[in-house]
Amino acid sequence: MAFGVFIHRADSIYDDRPAERYQFPQSYLARASACVGDWIVYHEPKKVKNTRGYFAVAKVECIVPDPTTPYMHLAIIEPGSYLDFVNPVPFNGEYGLLEQGLLNEHGKLSGWAQAAVRPLSSADFNRILDIGLADDQSFLPRTDDIHQISLHEEQTPFEFAVDRGRTTFLTSRTLRDRAFRQRVVRAYNERCAITGLKLINGGGRAEVEAAHIRPVEHGGPDIVNNGLALSGTVHWMFDRGLISLTDELEIIVSRQGNDPNRIRGLINDNGKAFFPLRPTDRPHPTFLAWHRENCFKH
Image (tube, rainbow, N blue to C red; front, top):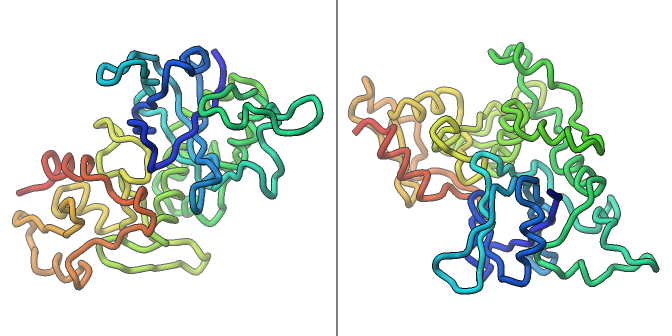
């Protein structure tokens, strides 16, 4: 087993779904296979406008031949392992070159830097994660949060040691919830998608919450397009199926609510949800359909 880097871009010709699978040609089979059972980091190349750099981490469950395309393979991502980074991690920026393993004996970038699938050392993996998952203190839970006791154990700054055993921390529900909240709240500019309100408390903390559209307990991934930034009351209504969204992000209100007129009075005047500027961050129709079919009270 070995860490690795998978290059991905949203406009790729490959049939990638980063939280589920990564498609690659036969020439990369040996390198990708070395990552089975281990973690990889996704990287968006610098040629992409407003590149995210290294933007997520995931665990490779297995490699299978692509049943639809000859000489292509799929790296299947272990369900629930994908995690968006909270912070953008540049390939070579203010922190210097993070993949030190790409340097040749003369200290210059080697040809490995162009490889779409490449190995990653433990030290380089840890450096990338240290930056990508570093805490922003303004996003930490309030002291009156009902989950304070369970979160207290992991309030220290997130840091990785080179010890590979620390990768078990990536499966921590506390870590994943915290990172998911930061990523979603930032994507929505700290504004509730349904009411349009942007409320900041006296400590500078956004009062909006991050809601999974398809809950984790029902197979929903910790990915920003499976999330909505919602105020507390709206979050409660969304989870209980009193409101939902169409694929076009139109807000729909259940007839089973005891006060539907007041509920409609809370939503955006145009009847549509506020959404992130980045297209890939917007709610995915697959997750919205799941919520309408399984949660929404028709």
